[in-house]
Length: 499
Image 1 (tube, helix red, strand yellow):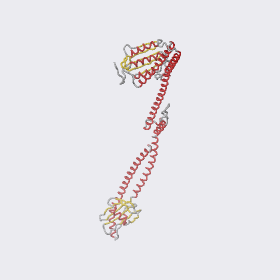
Image 2: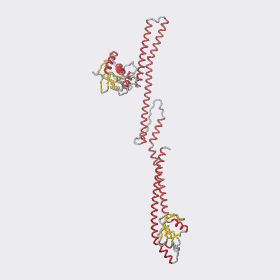
Image 3: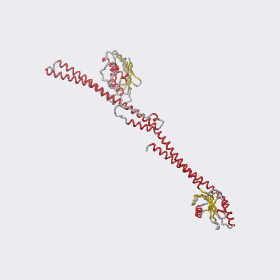
Image 4: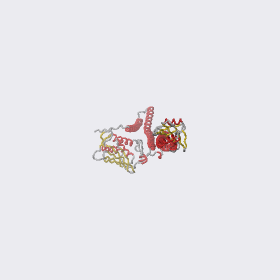
C-alpha cells in the first residue's frame, strides 16, 4: 500500500477503536444508571405494598372471598406495566398476579407466575417473562407470612439504550467519513513535496548525464522545499544534491575540455619538433645519397650541410625533451611526488636568478631587493630555483625592451615572500582566469609572440602548491606583480627539513 493509504488506515483504525471504546463505556454507564433508578422505584413500590397488602387480604378472608392480587390493586402504585403478585404461607391464599396498565389489570398465567417465583429475590433482579418481556422484580414477606412481589418493565431502558446505540453508530459513521476525507486531504497536501521530489528526480534520471555538456536545471519548486517541514527538508536536500551534481558535472565538462585542449596543445608542441627532425633527417639523407652517387660525399659543402641539419635535429630534440620533462614534472607534482625537502635560502635563490637572467635580456632593467638577513624556508631547492627562473623568464618574455623587472625577497610572519614586478603593459583580463593553465599563452595580452610551450606558470603554480604555499597575481597597465608565499615550515608530514 502507498504511504497515504497506510496513514489513512492507521488514523481511521485508531479513531474507530477509540470511538467504539467510548461508546461501550458510555452505554454501560448509562445502562447502569438507568438500572439503578429503576431499582429505586421498585424498592419504593415494594415498601409501600408490604404494609398495605396484609390487611386487605385478611379483610377479604373475613367476607369469605379468596384473596387474590387484583383485590388489592387499589393500593398498588400507579404506572404502566407495573407487576404485582402475592403468594402466602396460608393455604387459603392462592398465588396470583396482575399487570397494571392504564388502570386496568391483566391476570398473570400460571406459567408466568412460575417464572416470577423462580427468578424473584429480595433484591431487585432481572427476570424475563413470556409475552411480557424483561422486568426488574423484588419480593418481601409481611409479618403474617404473605409474600409480596412487585416489578417494573425494562422496556424504557432498552429503548433508551437502543436509541443511544443508533445515535452513536450514526455519529461514528459520519465522523469517520468526515475524518477520512479530512485525513486524505491533509495527507495529500502534506505529501505533495514528496511527489514533487519524485517528479523532479524522475526528470533528472531521464536526462543523459554520461556524455557531452550537461546542465541540470530541474529543481524542486521553492514552495515544496520549505525547510520548516519534514517533507520540505527532503525537497531542499534534493535541491542541494542537484546543485552539487550540477557543479560536479560542470567541473567534469571543464576538465574534459581542458584535457582535450591539453592533448591538442601537447600534440601540436610535439608535432613541430618531430616534423623538423623528420625534415632535416630526410634532407640529410638525400644530400648524402646524391653526394655518394657523385663521389663527393666527403666534400666540405656536404659535410657543412649535414652538420647544419644535425644541429637543427639536436635543437628540436632538446626542445621536445624539455617539453616531455615539463609534462612529466607536472604529472609527478600532481601525484605529490618529486619534491625533496631541505633548508632553502630564498635570498640566495633570488641573487642567482637575477644573475642568470641579466645576460639573457640585456635590454631590460633588472633590480634586486633582498633583506640583509637570509630568508630561510623548508622546501626543495631545485624546484624553488625553477620557480624564480620561470617567473623571471615570464616577465622578460612578455614585456618589451626597456621594461624594469624587480625581484623582491621578504619575510612576513612565518612565510617567505618572493615578488616579481614589472612595469610592462599588464595582463589582458580575458586570459587572467587561464593564466596558470597548462599550455596557456599570453601572446595576445603582452603584444609579443613567444617560443615557449605555455607550461612555465603551470609548473610554478604546481611547485608552490606542492610546498603548501600560494601564488597571487595583481596586474594593471604599467604594473604586474607575481607574489609567491612559501611557509617556513610546511604543515605536511612529507616535509622533512634537513640541514
